[in-house]
Length: 81
Image (tube, rainbow, N blue to C red; front, side, top):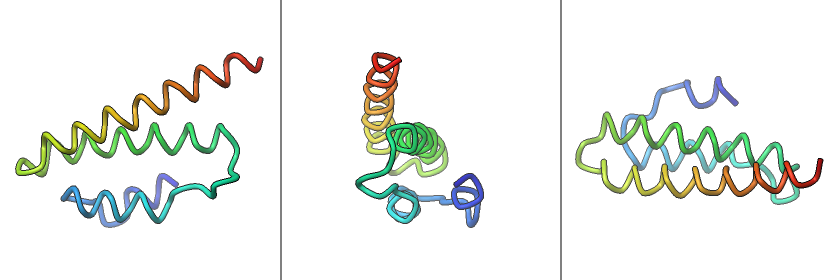
């Protein structure tokens, strides 16, 4: 997944959305796979906020949204142990 995110390095919010759609796990993927996806999504959106100033607010919204999802999944996974 790391190579996919780095290939072509998205420079706009729309490019980030497109990359993340292509690497999104299958609906029935494991919770750890989704956790990794949401963490990577959040990190990518933070990067986009820095390089796409016209969409920095929206990119940060997405970063926070994906970050919350990652936190929720991490909590669910820790309860299973």
